[in-house]
Length: 276
Image (cartoon, rainbow, N blue to C red; front, side, top):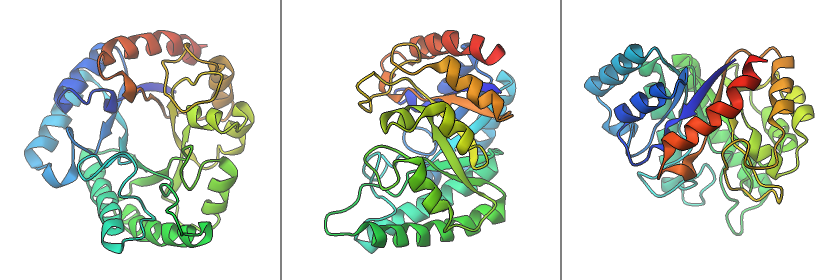
């Protein structure tokens, strides 16, 4: 297993600066952000792709994932979602996901992550929202299979898919080898999915991990590993037991005022666990 750091902690920096800073911290990988101010797909030309690839090569770093969850270029973290009642607004999410898949292909990234449906709109049943979500995912997965980039859904508290049982219900409706799970350890803790057991249970579908700590009250607020209540020794041991050999990406977007210090502290907590 290898450790990466998500560039969404570097919202006050350029993408090239984020690569340099994360590389200087000793991370083997970086999760790139398909959003402003980094790599909003509509604005990324060949020159930027070349610059990013050269900078990664210079630093000896790999891309762990492309984060296409947030859409701050349009509205915010969660909107437009896959289940917006307004068709035109919803189509922006589908189009963005397809554009992010093509961006990941150009960058040589293995996967992108997306939101788990979005907040359930007023007056929309869960069943109807699931149907809409599956329809949009199917369209995007056609492109995922074309370019060979995995499309990973990330369960999150407060959104359509929060828990692993709900993700498994979704997975039963998807027929694509490029569909998978982005297992966010902090999110699972928030909704009281038991961590070692859930890691083992979801191993066949898990293509990438996010890690952050969460306080004992399970409020969804990302903390630096070691500052909350998650037992990362047990988490890393459970991941090891699944024979997962990909990236574990630290996601600390609340720490934009000093992402270097947050990344350094997380690295110091997690690196010995990965090596043990």
